[in-house]
Amino acid sequence: MKKKSTKMIDLRSDTVTKPTPEMLNAMIGAIVGDDVFEEDPTVNAFQKKVAAMFGMESGLFVPSGVMSNQLGIKVLTESGDEILIDEKGHIYNYETGGAAFLSGVQIKPLIGKNGKLSVTELENQIKGAFDWEAKTKVVCLENTTNKGGGSCYSEEELSAIRAFAYENALLVHLDGARIWNAMTATGIAPKFFGQIADTISVCFSKGLGAPVGSMLLSSKERIAKARRYRKMWGGGMRQIGLLAAAAEYALDNNWELMKEDHHRAKEFAKTVSECSKLSIDLDSVETNIVIFDLLEEDAVSAQKKLAKKDIHVVPFGPKTLRATFHFQIGDSELERVKTAFRQIF
Ligand SMILES: *Cc1c(COP(=O)(O)O)cnc(C)c1O
Image 1: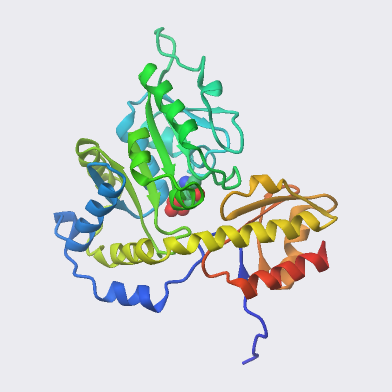
Image 2: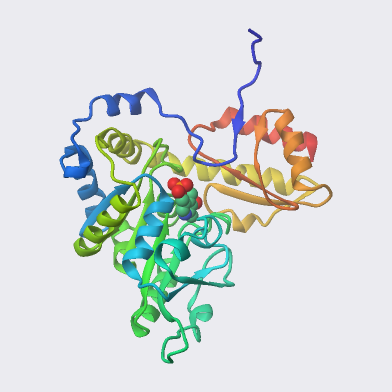
């Protein structure tokens, strides 16, 4: 067999991490039961732990972030309602039209900044007073924003949106796939998010590094409802203590590594800013996601040049690329990436 001289550097997403031996050990040691009967002690305890952390009554472990977002929308809306979201939102762009199909709601995309909404965009969007209007029911927020380049909301921004939602009888769903990154970058406590949102979706399979798993957090009543829909949608699982143990290991051990991911992302972004064929807004790099533009060639051709050096990124527009940092990209990988970028661009 031919020996490879370099290791593949995968910056396509923070979902590409592999379980570490320590995580696998935690999985092997898990005590399990049938979760359809609510008899898996490991997942039961983990749901309680994460819900308490965010100051929510209950949690529901689900296979994916898409499922927890869609369950959140399902329990907050009735068919025919309208939900508001930034045009860059994951629920609008990357969930297969699920909100329309599963909940029968229409999505109104709004133009915010870096994937974030503010009261300015939400004002004058509330409908439902007339028979011919859809009822505006939910504001969907994403923190950190994915397509928005990993930017985070401040406490002030979130409080203002929560106050606006109260005044207008709207509910708030928070897509916190990367809430861990947001908390690392801003220092905002988890309980604050529990106060500003009615439902929260958090993921363990992004930067935290678990192989599978997300969780919907909300009131007892809404989670009981979500549990029924999870079963209906084919997401009822059996001995998932194995997966919950991996997610819990990730939360307890990998969360603290995120500050290094953010630091490396910033270092990489500085190199990008020094490349004459690239352009980047350095201030936009707040967490582990780096989105940058190509001044000369198109994204696919640049992606191929990098792939020849076994460095992998994803196109995020005709002349835009995205690189995402995670704990399995260390300093030596970062150096190799920086060198390659200086050579190519
Ligand atoms: C990845 C992601 C999701 C969905 O997660 P899956 O586990 O891939 O279904 C939802 N929202 C955001 C912002 C994401 O980045």
